[in-house]
Image (cartoon, rainbow, N blue to C red; front, top):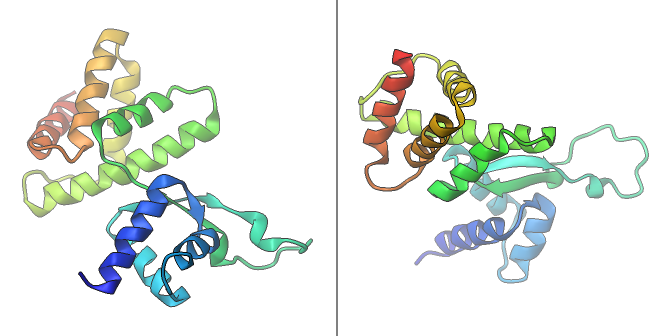
Length: 183
Protein backbone atom coordinates (compact mmCIF):
# COMPACT_ATOMS: atom_id res chain seq x y z
CA UNK A 1 0.00 0.00 0.00
CA UNK A 2 1.37 3.44 -0.88
CA UNK A 3 2.35 5.96 1.76
CA UNK A 4 -0.20 8.47 0.44
CA UNK A 5 -2.99 5.90 0.68
CA UNK A 6 -1.96 5.07 4.25
CA UNK A 7 -2.02 8.78 5.11
CA UNK A 8 -5.48 9.15 3.56
CA UNK A 9 -6.85 6.22 5.56
CA UNK A 10 -5.26 7.52 8.76
CA UNK A 11 -6.68 11.00 8.12
CA UNK A 12 -10.21 9.64 7.58
CA UNK A 13 -9.90 7.51 10.71
CA UNK A 14 -8.89 10.48 12.85
CA UNK A 15 -11.60 12.76 11.42
CA UNK A 16 -14.13 9.95 11.95
CA UNK A 17 -13.26 9.77 15.63
CA UNK A 18 -13.76 13.50 16.27
CA UNK A 19 -14.10 16.72 14.33
CA UNK A 20 -10.81 18.58 14.34
CA UNK A 21 -9.34 21.80 13.02
CA UNK A 22 -6.67 21.48 10.37
CA UNK A 23 -4.01 22.45 12.92
CA UNK A 24 -5.15 19.84 15.47
CA UNK A 25 -5.52 17.23 12.73
CA UNK A 26 -1.97 17.91 11.55
CA UNK A 27 -0.72 17.57 15.14
CA UNK A 28 -2.51 14.20 15.50
CA UNK A 29 -1.18 12.94 12.17
CA UNK A 30 2.38 13.97 13.00
CA UNK A 31 2.26 11.73 16.07
CA UNK A 32 2.00 8.78 13.68
CA UNK A 33 3.70 9.93 10.48
CA UNK A 34 5.90 12.58 8.96
CA UNK A 35 3.22 14.41 6.96
CA UNK A 36 3.78 17.85 5.47
CA UNK A 37 1.28 20.68 5.56
CA UNK A 38 0.99 20.56 1.75
CA UNK A 39 0.29 16.82 1.74
CA UNK A 40 -2.47 17.29 4.31
CA UNK A 41 -3.94 20.13 2.23
CA UNK A 42 -3.97 17.86 -0.82
CA UNK A 43 -5.64 15.04 1.13
CA UNK A 44 -8.25 17.34 2.66
CA UNK A 45 -9.07 18.94 -0.70
CA UNK A 46 -9.51 15.53 -2.34
CA UNK A 47 -11.83 14.46 0.50
CA UNK A 48 -13.83 17.69 0.21
CA UNK A 49 -14.10 17.28 -3.56
CA UNK A 50 -15.25 13.65 -3.19
CA UNK A 51 -17.66 14.74 -0.42
CA UNK A 52 -16.16 12.35 2.13
CA UNK A 53 -15.71 15.18 4.64
CA UNK A 54 -17.25 18.59 5.17
CA UNK A 55 -16.35 21.82 6.89
CA UNK A 56 -18.23 21.95 10.17
CA UNK A 57 -16.90 25.09 11.81
CA UNK A 58 -13.94 27.23 12.70
CA UNK A 59 -11.58 26.96 15.69
CA UNK A 60 -10.68 30.47 16.86
CA UNK A 61 -7.99 29.05 19.15
CA UNK A 62 -5.54 29.55 16.26
CA UNK A 63 -5.71 33.28 17.07
CA UNK A 64 -4.50 32.98 20.67
CA UNK A 65 -3.32 36.38 21.87
CA UNK A 66 -4.62 38.27 18.83
CA UNK A 67 -7.35 40.79 19.64
CA UNK A 68 -8.16 42.08 16.19
CA UNK A 69 -8.51 39.31 13.62
CA UNK A 70 -7.92 40.50 10.06
CA UNK A 71 -7.27 37.29 8.20
CA UNK A 72 -8.60 33.76 7.91
CA UNK A 73 -6.15 31.01 8.74
CA UNK A 74 -6.82 27.66 7.13
CA UNK A 75 -5.46 26.05 10.31
CA UNK A 76 -8.73 26.94 12.08
CA UNK A 77 -11.08 25.21 9.64
CA UNK A 78 -12.79 22.28 11.38
CA UNK A 79 -13.46 19.13 9.37
CA UNK A 80 -15.98 16.37 9.99
CA UNK A 81 -16.67 13.06 8.32
CA UNK A 82 -19.76 12.65 6.15
CA UNK A 83 -21.29 9.38 7.24
CA UNK A 84 -23.63 7.53 4.89
CA UNK A 85 -24.82 4.82 7.23
CA UNK A 86 -28.67 4.72 7.29
CA UNK A 87 -28.74 5.12 11.06
CA UNK A 88 -26.43 8.16 10.95
CA UNK A 89 -28.56 9.72 8.22
CA UNK A 90 -31.74 9.03 10.21
CA UNK A 91 -30.18 10.82 13.18
CA UNK A 92 -29.46 13.83 10.96
CA UNK A 93 -33.04 13.85 9.67
CA UNK A 94 -34.37 13.73 13.25
CA UNK A 95 -32.09 16.63 14.20
CA UNK A 96 -34.04 18.80 11.76
CA UNK A 97 -36.78 18.89 14.40
CA UNK A 98 -34.43 19.96 17.20
CA UNK A 99 -35.02 23.12 19.22
CA UNK A 100 -31.33 23.95 18.87
CA UNK A 101 -30.86 26.08 15.72
CA UNK A 102 -27.17 25.14 15.40
CA UNK A 103 -28.06 21.41 15.35
CA UNK A 104 -30.71 22.03 12.69
CA UNK A 105 -28.29 24.07 10.57
CA UNK A 106 -25.54 21.44 10.85
CA UNK A 107 -27.95 18.60 10.03
CA UNK A 108 -29.33 20.49 7.00
CA UNK A 109 -25.81 21.22 5.76
CA UNK A 110 -24.70 17.59 6.04
CA UNK A 111 -27.92 16.19 4.57
CA UNK A 112 -27.70 18.56 1.61
CA UNK A 113 -24.13 17.43 0.88
CA UNK A 114 -25.17 13.76 1.02
CA UNK A 115 -28.27 14.48 -1.09
CA UNK A 116 -26.31 16.33 -3.78
CA UNK A 117 -23.71 13.55 -3.89
CA UNK A 118 -26.48 10.98 -4.39
CA UNK A 119 -28.00 13.08 -7.18
CA UNK A 120 -24.60 13.32 -8.90
CA UNK A 121 -24.23 9.54 -8.70
CA UNK A 122 -27.71 8.98 -10.09
CA UNK A 123 -27.19 11.59 -12.80
CA UNK A 124 -23.87 9.96 -13.81
CA UNK A 125 -25.75 6.72 -14.41
CA UNK A 126 -28.49 8.70 -16.19
CA UNK A 127 -31.09 7.12 -13.96
CA UNK A 128 -32.62 10.48 -13.10
CA UNK A 129 -32.12 14.06 -14.11
CA UNK A 130 -32.69 16.86 -11.65
CA UNK A 131 -32.24 20.43 -12.76
CA UNK A 132 -32.07 22.05 -9.32
CA UNK A 133 -30.88 19.86 -6.45
CA UNK A 134 -31.59 22.54 -3.84
CA UNK A 135 -35.24 22.82 -4.88
CA UNK A 136 -35.85 19.07 -4.79
CA UNK A 137 -34.01 18.80 -1.45
CA UNK A 138 -36.20 21.53 0.02
CA UNK A 139 -39.28 19.80 -1.40
CA UNK A 140 -38.22 16.50 0.26
CA UNK A 141 -37.70 18.16 3.65
CA UNK A 142 -40.99 20.07 3.36
CA UNK A 143 -42.83 16.89 2.40
CA UNK A 144 -41.42 15.02 5.41
CA UNK A 145 -42.16 17.84 7.85
CA UNK A 146 -45.73 18.32 6.62
CA UNK A 147 -46.79 14.66 6.95
CA UNK A 148 -48.61 13.13 9.90
CA UNK A 149 -46.25 11.42 12.36
CA UNK A 150 -46.82 7.87 11.07
CA UNK A 151 -46.13 8.88 7.45
CA UNK A 152 -43.25 11.11 8.58
CA UNK A 153 -41.49 8.11 10.12
CA UNK A 154 -41.91 6.07 6.93
CA UNK A 155 -40.60 8.89 4.69
CA UNK A 156 -37.72 9.59 7.07
CA UNK A 157 -36.70 5.91 7.03
CA UNK A 158 -36.96 5.74 3.24
CA UNK A 159 -34.90 8.90 2.85
CA UNK A 160 -32.25 7.52 5.22
CA UNK A 161 -32.03 4.31 3.17
CA UNK A 162 -32.02 6.23 -0.14
CA UNK A 163 -29.13 8.45 0.92
CA UNK A 164 -27.11 5.62 2.41
CA UNK A 165 -24.56 3.52 0.63
CA UNK A 166 -26.41 0.24 1.16
CA UNK A 167 -27.08 -2.07 -1.77
CA UNK A 168 -30.13 -1.01 -3.76
CA UNK A 169 -30.13 2.53 -2.38
CA UNK A 170 -29.59 4.08 -5.82
CA UNK A 171 -32.75 2.50 -7.24
CA UNK A 172 -34.69 3.36 -4.09
CA UNK A 173 -33.45 6.96 -4.39
CA UNK A 174 -34.73 7.16 -7.96
CA UNK A 175 -38.18 5.94 -6.89
CA UNK A 176 -38.19 8.28 -3.90
CA UNK A 177 -37.38 11.33 -6.04
CA UNK A 178 -40.06 10.36 -8.56
CA UNK A 179 -42.55 10.03 -5.68
CA UNK A 180 -41.62 13.46 -4.29
CA UNK A 181 -41.81 15.03 -7.77
CA UNK A 182 -45.31 13.59 -8.25
CA UNK A 183 -46.57 15.43 -5.16
